Image 1 (spheres, rainbow, N blue to C red):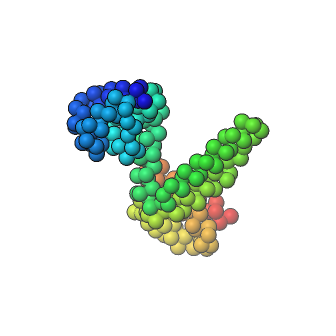
Image 2: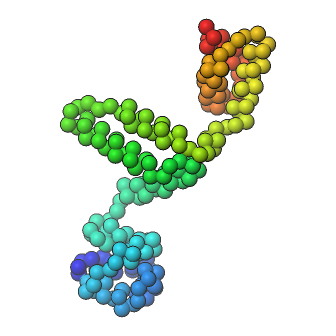
Image 3: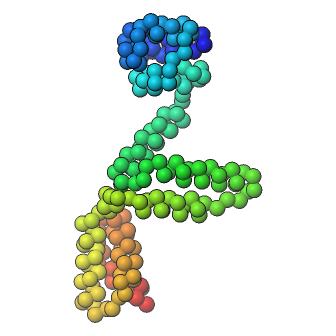
Length: 197
């Protein structure tokens, strides 16, 4: 407990805060802060959460090991993932379940030398399908132009194209034009002729 208190004090000082300031941020009195730093008392989890939010390295306080870039990257990825979930309206925390599948596959690969990532890939695709805001990923203006160009070509060439084939052509062409940044009428013609044959 003495080492814990010493590291807690180091972190408070690193943040350039007095005992009173740090205690207030963490929701305790100055006497409690003094007792924690002496190693006479153990703080609550809510205290440690608030200390962490204030910028203290709680991992260091508990273990004596500073968190490195792996810890920072993990926190950054978690924050980025949360943002993606919010923007796309995806089911929250579902990726954590999917991550466990990857860990299982990695363990299987280590023990048997074989692994199949198909279940993981299907789970990711199913998760993405839960999006309540898929239009955030799609350039709706470009998609509308692609559909209009396909309809124009089909009508002008008097081509009959099943709805399923038209949908496949739309997706393929949308991806190509999204990557290139321009609609290519020759590519539309070639794609329709290829799909209908």
